[in-house]
Amino acid sequence: MYINFVFKENKYNNIAKWLLLITFLVGLMIFVGGLTRLTDSGLSITKWNLFSGILPPFSIEKWEKTFSLYKEIPEYYLKNSSMTLSEFKVIFWWEYAHRLLGRIIGIFYIVPLFYFTIKKKLKRNTLFSLYIILLLILLQGFVGWYMVVSGLTEKTDVSHYRLSLHLTLAFIIYIILFWNFLRYKYVNTSQSYSMLPKYILVFFLVIILIQISIGALVSGLDAGQIYNSWPLMNSSYYPDDSNLRILFSPQAFEIPSVVQFIHRNIAYFIFIFYLFILYTIVKNDKLKNLKGIALLIFVLLFIQILLGIFTILSGTNIVLASLHQMGSIFLVTAYLILIFRNSKIN
Image (cartoon, rainbow, N blue to C red; front, side, top):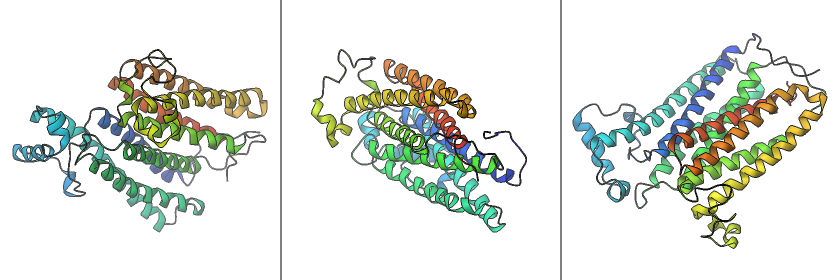
């Protein structure tokens, strides 16, 4: 007997569709946010106007005013002093799309959540996690601005630590959302006789989140633009511009080459560890309900590693880098399905 994952009509279908929509929007938000970073667009809007900022500039006067605010920050006069208004509009629209998506997610989540709560449509055992998501979405808005502020005064880029926090929190929201979608969509499913130990699967998910966080540090430090070779970093395994002792100190996360080294090696660990999980599933006939999704994850993981290698070799080509980030969304999604299929369903 194994978990049957056939779509069936149930009384929670509308809630499941709502959660799937929000999950999709958060995934889109992560993708657009990655492109906002890769195009250096994140500091183009220097004010946080929660309500009045919904509308973009329409007149030439408003565009000039918005551009003049950008001219006051270090990124402009230290890096982009020759930028024209037309060029500014390109980076503005990326950041505007990112912020607009954030507002849409907030509205699309809060209003239905309160409606379903008042109508008592939600399962009691999910209320806590659904309202935790609400708090995390509100916190994410603050963290986003907290990140932007770090690049408006002395630096020409945002803090890579705050960027990492912002991305990691986005993935945590995505994970909780998608997990709740699965709980509402797939009800009345049978239980499997044999399961993988949950601690192994959860540990692997934590490692993926750590890798995503380190990846954000790589992006924030532009660490992908150095040591554009693989498997070695130029001619050595460890970067030759750093002492090995630094790897074991807090300073390691300040040095681009060391951060890239850490990101590479966590990827190797993830691949080897997943081979162990895959082998355990394939050799056990009682886990046959997991084999299909487990093999899909292997393919996604392999593609993700290839994209990471090609991104490094290309010196962070924007298309490859954005595909690499999108790959992490697909990988996390598939892995959550694996965990869910391995779980006992209430």
